[in-house]
Image (cartoon, rainbow, N blue to C red; front, side, top):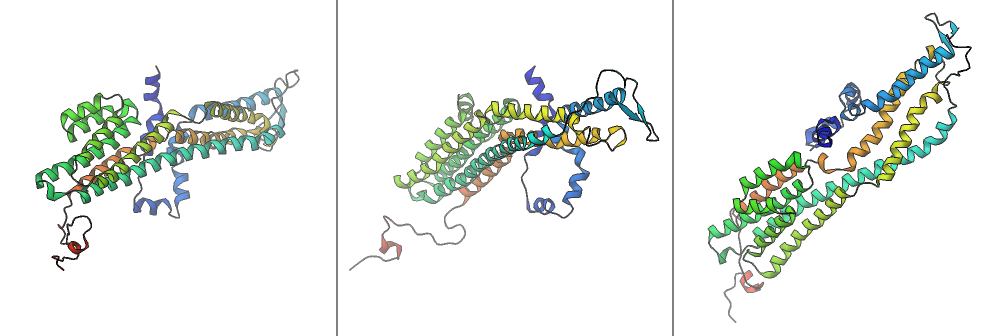
Length: 371
């Protein structure tokens, strides 16, 4: 069962631990002078390496098999490093070995494939992160404009508080719907419904949950709340322009989610790398001949497999960026910031507040008019 495999996959399960948000303390630790030692000590804890167990086991097993085969059909050394013919030395079956030259010739092409795949995957992650950065910036901008432009003289204080709170909640609701839209059902659906019903009016929450495209419904609710704000239509249009950017970020993110790096490219890279590493023990048989019974071939292949398969695994993990981005953390911050912004009231910090019509200079300067 595919779903069961996903649940049981260590590689999938570990993605939620990669949703890192750095603080100043994290940066200090990240660039500390003992970072190399710390990375070596925690080598066995790496989620990337743990997820490559089957691949590394395959290449290491082939290396061990070649060592055993060639000891049987070629020569071997005893514990005193004295060489002897193997039990089947005189048979027509040869030892298993290849010249290293084909691997040397193929390695630049393999390197180019891996570099392109890794760079492209990183660009996808970077674009997704920038989309959420734009969400963070423009949610604050939208709510700030709504709070600053709101004509408090036209309505009661209670109505103003209700309108601005609704604006902040609907702004949060869009990004929360976007997060759910870009997350797996089994990971986020239950929490999504619970959050919406806790923060939004029940009827509105149920309408969003029932919608075929939830971010679109949330964006429509946001547009309605903007239209309800008492202010000049030009100011309202400016706030709508800030909301339009959310649609662009959503479309860009949907493109990343639905369109991977062309799968034929990824498959060819994986096949190239697999055959190259699976056959490499044959090419390294001669160059590693100075070790006892060529035994250095086994750990050498283990390390090469970990690092080269690890590069491909990094690219694969980055290719779909949303489940390794801390989107829930982004949504929580957006909620807190938006709710704080709408709590600000003109003049509540002692700053003077001037209300005037049509940029009337006399009114701005405090003049009472006259000739």
